[in-house]
Image (cartoon, rainbow, N blue to C red):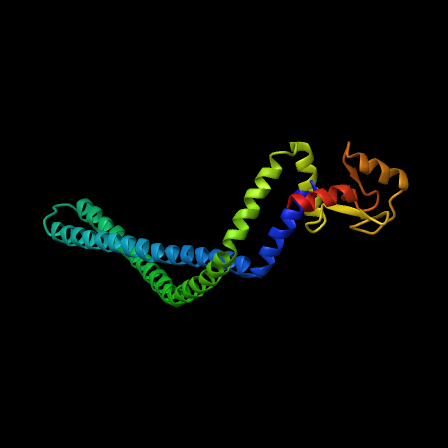
Length: 236
């Protein structure tokens, strides 16, 4: 368990050497996805508005043709009832044209707004892409610099993890997460290496038996004896 802590500490140090680059890259990737989705939605709005506008325009043309047809038929009818019926058809078509014309104005405005917004997003997208490419290059250079060492440590970690039971590993990971990466600490001069709280002599004796996992009564970290520390250092 202590050997695993040592490997994880070394891996943490490698991550620290990368600074904020991994987080910066992840943040830029997230922002880029949001901008791309926004641009796509704006493009879809323009496209759908134009398609609907064209369909509306086609319907208006059809209605106007019907109106002309109805007007010509009015001269051919023989009764007032037939004339009035055609007049109602003409009025209905005119009302529909008025409504559709307003809808076309709305669609035109929607398309124009989306097109303008899309034009504003485009340079922002390019700027994000360039910045992301630059940061990815920096991160790749750092990763490459420590690639061999990191792979070696990862391989060593896998071997150690394979020798630890799942419950113990779960306990280790839980403490490590809660204690800023330090889950296992040595007892130095009868004190916890994490919080420096005094460890009773009886517990120190129990630690040296290496028969069970013991934790600090104050900070909850896993404690290991000097013998464990020495053997782990030799193994590494």
